[in-house]
Length: 286
Length: 286
DNA sequence: ATGTCTTTGTGAACGCGTGCACAAAGATAG
DNA sequence: CTATCTTTGTGCACGCGTTCACAAAGACAT
Image 1 (cartoon, chains in turn red, purple, brown, orange):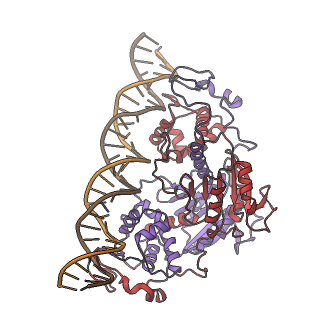
Image 2 (cartoon, protein in one colour; image 1 turned 135 degrees about the horizontal axis):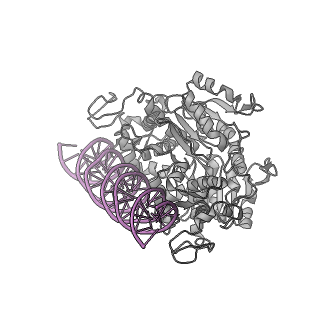
Image 3 (cartoon, each protein chain N blue to C red; image 1 turned 45 degrees about the horizontal axis):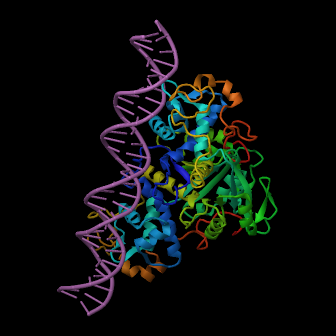
């Protein structure tokens, strides 16, 4: 999953719709759209819930935040609900979007059908590589970074997508914000710092995989040998002090351990230059 | 963000680590790795928290689930913590991964640096398009779908990534599961149904954008004109029934409304064939 | 009109996650 | 050894989100 929003008091809901509910509305909308295409007139909360992969009670409560759109004994009117959710999500208006960083991922996003189909319009593709300039991607000519501010102003763009390498993400975000963008979807593996009032949502592929790995490890046998410290049982047996005490003698760790690496080879990353941790495969550093 | 995990009692944590904490561990790991590369020996919870973009109290509580790895008055040993988190996440072992659907997105994933750098190894790239077979992507030759089961068994793959169009996602998932995969990262905009014991995490680009649009709408002026149904005010004015009652006359809605679309143009998607809702730009329907 | 049946909408309880605030633990200086 | 200072680890309280369970509401049949 894209990993949540940037920290905010969760009191984001201006007039009452809980964040958790907002996050599910697109899910319902997709299921409803499918039903609409099959000309299904009404659905019960049970049916729709199962189609969206959630609990029916949760779905009903979610809808209750939007208003009373159902009919007892019958269910919900599909078309009407599609409209109401679309409106609530702001999908009835046009949202021009800029995508910055047209590498593999940026191109994938530009081609993504789900964008255009829901009120989102790709206003411009931006890349810092001069070699990319003018090259058509998904039917749109890539523009150079220099054009960023102009494009944003001319099109009234308020949503920006960052698909650059990690190192470029923050500078790009700064420029986006300065030019008037107030919502950012960030695919670069970095924590962006933005001024108050700017929303940042993050999608981190690496994190998702790591979470899967965690659960996977839990399934097939427990942790690798090197036990964890159950206070009082067998501890690392190292220089172990008291019961709850320091595991590896922190003070001596400073410079000595850095070279000799006390811990097993979990840190050394094979052949990666330091710094490009989870850099995206974008063509060039915008 | 990838949007949460597939519903599960949140009691996933086998022996105690809360899901919310697990989701943050990769974040800490990334920040710690950066510190490690700069040869920083120790960090305080305050420093690390700000680097990871979280609250220091939350970070300390998170670490407390792993054990007492800090030294009071000093902080945490960077190298040691990197190792402990890596181990807890299962990153000290090798995770062979298959990517199914080598379109724009699949290629982007294959090239993603963050994969290889953390114990994940791309065991195979699979695509249903015969024209893709043998074509090298990110240095790996694409294999035909027919090879899927063989590749999984031979490499002991337990994690699969689905980057196919929506229509192919469920069939692919079924085959993955049947072949032994127990964790799936799904990029296709569909709700996958999998047997008990199989983890599914979902990354949905369209949903992320829609959530941003919601917040964006809240910032710049409120909802579009067409008011919400304050029971008794102006409703769609269609065949309007009673006060709290059916908003658009559900019964008559069946076929009539489908063609004439009572609700404003929120449903009709410009030029999209019905059915490919949020299909991914993958080259071919695996 | 009355009764039955279906499905919504929601009050209330519960559990997880977050953040505060502080005591305990160790470092460090004298 | 004692005192002071820093930083961890955590008990506690609060709020959000989920779920249960049921009354209210309407459809539908008689």
